[in-house]
Amino acid sequence: MVKKVKPQKVLVAMSGGVDSSVTAALLKEAEGFEVIGVFIKFWLAPNKNGLEGKWNRCCSPEAEKRARFVSSKLKIPFYVLNFENEFKKRIVDYFLKGYKNGITPNPCVVCNKEVKFGLLLKKARQLGAKFIATGHYAKIKEGKDGIRLIKAKDKQKDQSYFLWKLNQKQLSHVLFPVGGYTKNEVRKMSKKFKLKLSGVLESQDVCFVKPTTNDFLKRYLKIKPGKIINVEGRIIGEHQGLWFYTIGQRKGINLSGGPFYVTDKDLKKNILIVSKNKKDLYKKEVIVKNVNWISGKAPELPIKVKIKIRYGHKAENATISKIKNKKYKLQFKTAQKAVTPGQSAVFYKGNQVLGGGIIT
Image (cartoon, rainbow, N blue to C red; front, side, top):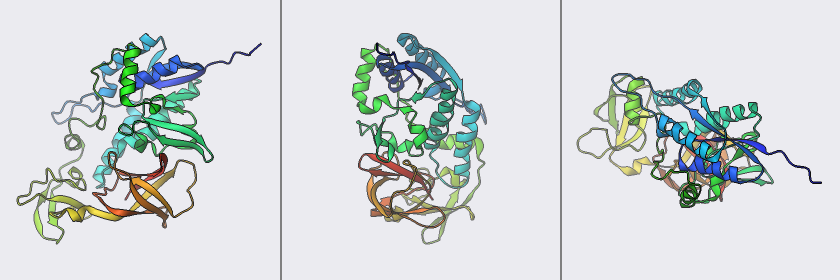
């Protein structure tokens, strides 16, 4: 007589969108899983300075209603988890502190590490679930060096860039069911499962930033006027606060005789540095800190890899070598445009994500 194996519990993070809904449907259809749907409430900016806080599509009341409907359709349990306070402390405050310190942070990377694969995984373990699953477009494979994070089948939708902070322990409890499909295939499966999600828009921007980054920053960071100088050191204007600008920015500088591009920021002197010459935006050498190697240990260095310095940018050839104070030097074969402090530089070897670091 064959012993019946008890299904493994898996918590599916459901946003009411197509990707997470199909994730739940695929796991429900597969053998060996007891699927539980969860909807996470993040943080809603309060009304402030005449601006009304608005829910992002991923955690709005309408999104929760869709997630409930899908869970009911799939006949799986459904729960709502309130992570508002932790999200504010770990993500929103990190975002505001970064801008105040003159960098351009990437809160989605930190949210994945701290919230979606941190707090949610902890909650899953408390509920006796071995796995959590999300609608991220990425893949996981077992390798000689442990669990590997791999690019998704759909290279246009691949979200591995945002997952470089994850570690072996987290990845051992994570499932990415849609990572092996294209977006079109996922949409077709949504119709096959009769989830009634056609026309649901995707969330593209930072979830809590509404309507624009500068509008959000104006709620919390005071105006702090300072000088705008060109790369030759001549004063050519005044800015309203360094946090309203990012490296490579062209629009919104409000100087005549342009276009001008933001090339640097001097935080101590509260000076914005601009140039008319696009060549001043390019760098071959980049320093990164807070590096995470997904395997748990650094490879033998120096190593030749491909590196993305921003989501949506093409990964470019570069060499990684270590320098003092736990920092690493990235030497690119060709100069990269608008290398921005605070953003993530993510390291790839073929389709595998080796890790990443924060650009200094």
